[in-house]
Image (cartoon, rainbow, N blue to C red; front, side, top):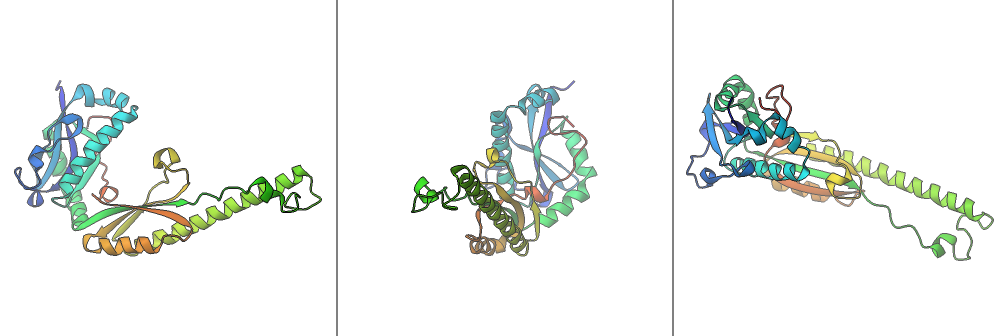
Length: 276
């Protein structure tokens, strides 16, 4: 049984692939776990790959490793580094993180069997990049101080005859209504932002909103969008994003990136963490 597998990062057309000694230095590119990146070619396509040990990238070791967030983060950064380097030289179809085959011949079979699918994807993304836009509901203003809540005459702020408990409940209801109104405003703005950006994009995707533990922000995410944009319209796209700021949601723009969101193919029945 082999003790190594072939880790796949990205696929390009053979005619677009840079030479091994090209100006971008891809011959010295390092991938996951510090492994050198090389190529496997067939059917007019080129896959960028690394040889990886199966005692670290086999099914069981990967299943354990994928529970280690530090390992996942380090591996994702190395994977992304390779994909971005390749995408800087040619139209690129990124492959999902930790896609591992039993050997180079299986990768060649993939290139032959899925050639038409890859060619169609690469034609779609040629001359285009992915931009990411996230929108967040703005945090509510801090609650008023005790004096402001009570009113200038020292009453509850709701009615001079309200008991402290009743006044508190009224303020609580008003706060919740304000929060709901702010959420609706942000959600409506997210729809408007997505529609406006989709209009200047070739294609668009709405991903699931990230939890604050992933986004790194306390505010709720109301839009997690990806947009495939012609490279010569990148400035126009960014200008549209700027024009949409300050209208009910905080907006973040990232990119340009390799077109991860627009090149997804089902490459087999194994889930991430299994050798195909």
